[in-house]
Image 1 (cartoon, rainbow, N blue to C red):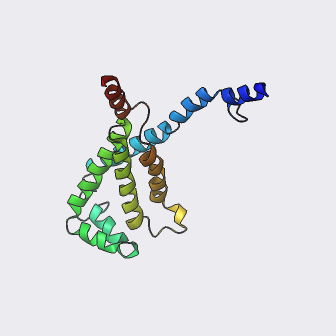
Image 2 (cartoon, rainbow, N blue to C red):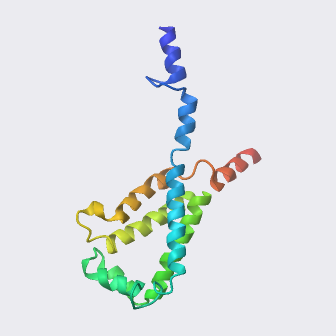
Amino acid sequence: MTHTYRARATYGAGADEPRGRRATASRYALLPLRLFLGVTFVYAGLTKLTDERFMAASGTGSIGDLMRSVRDSSAVPFLIDQALKNPEVSGYAIAFGELAVGIGTLLGLLARLAAAGGALISLSLWLTVSWQSTPYYYGNDLVYLMAWVPLVLAGAPVLSLDAALASRRRRAR
């Protein structure tokens, strides 16, 4: 009986590897998601900021034409109506928001806040641009929204400025 107890204490119930190794792997489990979302949102923001066609009120590839094309099929047309009052400002807000979220996520700085911002951007894009996708799982913005949720809940516990600052605060006590 002592042997069984030691095995469980060292390896966990039915696990093939020591608990310490599993705990370390668990700490790093969100890192690939954090890197993917961070790089994707930085890229999305930079792409919008460097595309003069996107930042226009009208014309092929413009934020204005995109919003007008999805307005009637959107779950929240009043939100699009507000954005259409000044499409260029809306385009810059989206682009700078994506850039801030991506950088915060990559650096792990204010990681939960950055993830909440990413979730909010993804939610707004799902309710406006992707809402008409049928079946719903064809719309990628819903998947991005769900991908942000673990980072909202867990933050960036490793390889992050948040973790480094927390460690520094603990040492200073």
